[in-house]
Length: 112
Length: 115
Image (cartoon, rainbow over all chains, first blue to last red; front, side, top):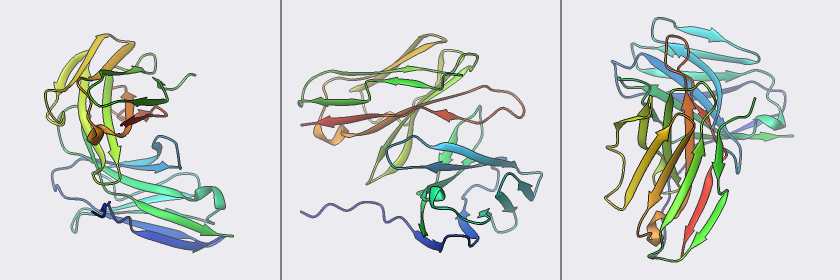
């Protein structure tokens, strides 16, 4: 039979444009959120995090926005580059030590 | 600084054989996580340790899977006997618990193929 895998949402962006990757999280009690980037053949790599007492945090070329009212998280990448092509995961800490739950990911394709 | 080290990077084995995956966390980190990644289910947490003690193994699929952490610098994930459906990439990650230090750092993964 035909194998069925996760259907990753895909975002295609022109090089130089800004990218916005969205994530809906599930647990209103989550207190910590992380964005990871996974390039092909590699492990997930930390990009940026945000705690629930914040609504915005900026890093180098990246900004994370948190809207707790609608349980929504977004990652904004400024001036997207070909090296930004990867799968991006949001993760939420659901309580107790450092256990986090990962979303299914979004594939970002940068068009040169 | 060396990151999380995993071995082997690739493993091909036959159904029924025992498989042992190894992980060396980042020095000074006191939490260690084992994940499995497949196309079907994405990234799943199997088990995590804090200060070498297993805290949550609810993600371990079945009794064929076991994990140990005999000391702060080494952990193993064992599958016995292995089955084709165990084929996946297995990641180890470590972190240092404490306020502001919850980031998990992932290793390069072990790609397991069970024939």
